[in-house]
Length: 478
Image (cartoon, rainbow, N blue to C red):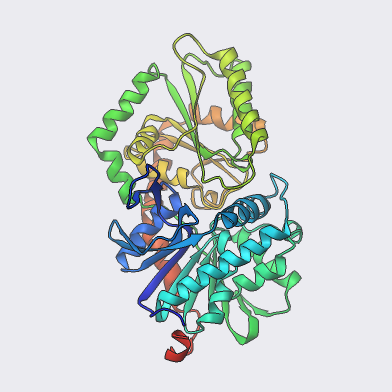
C-alpha cells in the first residue's frame, strides 16, 4: 500500500538542496548546498507550497521528512552500493561524459545500469507515496530519466514533467548507450519533456525517430496513445536575488578588498567551473599561457582567477584531469608570476554566495567557456551582478546560454586562437561604450527571463499538454 498522498506540487532531483554537516551532531544539522539548479528551484517550491524529493547525502541512513528554509523536504535513502554504482558509476561515468559530447570516453557496466534502475524505482515509489491525486510532478535531470515511465505505471493520474539540464547528445553518441531504448521509454513517460536548447531538442527528436516506433507530429510524440510534448525552455537564475546581493555595501566592500589583495591589477579575468574536462579549463589555461608567452598580456597588470568548485564526486577519480590542470597552472605561475602575485590564482573550493558575488563584482571579464554545457549558471549570475553595466562576458558557443546572450563575445572553446582573440577583445574593446550598452541589454533580458519566468512558462506548458484521467482513489492509494 502506498502512503497517503498529500502534496499537489512535487519537485524531484537527485539531491536535496541541503548538505549534511558531518560533525557527529545528533540530530543531523543541515546547510544549503550551492548548486545552481537547487538555488533556482528553491523559490519555485516555496511559492507553490510544494515538497522536494531527493537524496540527503548520507549513505545507508534513513532520515525523516524535513522543513528547511520554508519548504518541505522528503529525503530518499540510498545504500552505499548505489551511491557508488548509480551516482558514481552510471550517472557520472556513463551518462555525463556521453551527454557532454564524449569529451571524456564514457564507460559502461551492467551493474551500474542495474543500480540506476533500482534508484529510479525507489524515487518513483517515494513520489507516488506523497503526491496528491492529480498532482503535478516535476522531475529533473539525467540521474532520473526512468522515473517518468515508472511513476506513470504507479500513478497514471499524475501530471508528469521532465527537464534535462545537461545537453542531450547527438544520435551518433546516444546510439552507443546500451540502455538507449530504456532511457527513451523512461523519458516518454512524461507529459512534457523540456530541454535547454533547440539543438538538444532536435537531438532527442532524432533519437526517437531512429530508435523508436512512435507516431510523431509537430512537437508531439504519441507513445501508447498518449501525447508527449517536446519543448525548449532555457533555464535561468534568480536575477533579483543576485542583484540584491551585488548592491549590498558589505559585498561591494569585499569586492574592493579582493582587488586590493590581488595588488589592484588593471584587469581581472574570472572563471568558475567544476573540475571536469567538459568545462574547458585546460583550453582556457592554454590560451592564457600563449597570450603571456607572446607578450600580448602583461602579467603585472592582468591576472586570471580560476575557481574550480568541488562537486559531489561519487564516481571514478579523475587524476589525469586534475594533474593536467595542476601542471598547467604551475607552469604558468613558474614562468610569469612576480614576487607579490601569481599569474593564475587557482582556487579549488566552493565559495559561499556573498564571496562568489564579490568575485563577480571584482572581475572585469567573465570567461564562461565550457566545451559543452546546458545552461551556464555562472554566466547568468555574472550578468545579474553587474549592476553598473560594466564587465564583459566571453561565452562558449557550446553552451545553451549563448542563444540568449547574442551581445556576449561568443567563441568556439576548442579553438585556442579564437579564445585568445576573444580574451584580447574583452580586455581591450574597440568601443568601450558599446560594451556597457551590450551589458545593459543582457541584464534587461535576464530580468525578463529569470528563473521564475522559466518555471512559470514550463509549468504552464505542462498544464496544457494533455487531458489526464480523473484521479482514482483506488489507483492513488494502491
